Image 1 (cartoon, one colour):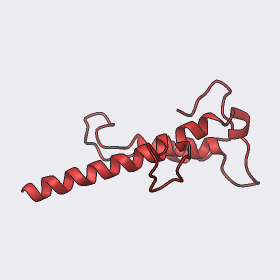
Image 2: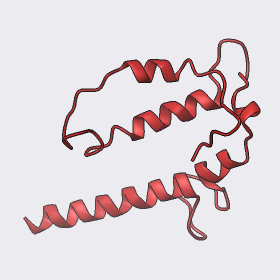
Image 3: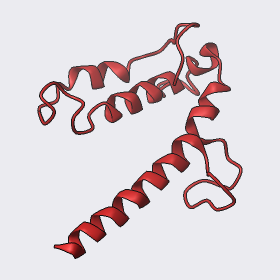
Image 4: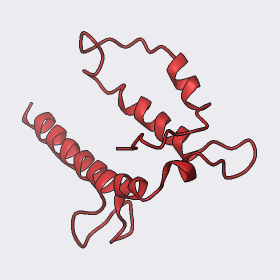
Length: 111
């Protein structure tokens, strides 16, 4: 039983460190997913204004706003985020609508 608990703790710490690096940037001089000195997703998104986030990179491709909305939706599915805490049914409609997001309001922020 102790091995499982230790393994779970190591996994949780590694996952937490990886997500911190991805979203907030590497915390020190070591980086495993991003390059050292990269700002992380949140700070990078803060540098993009709503008009740039709403612009398609090319015809038929999704906007940064759509990708950000998709990421937000996916992260909202984490266990415990639904009423009742463990409900597994996911309504696919918001996910599909998110990919259609073409324009981001000027006052809407990514974080």
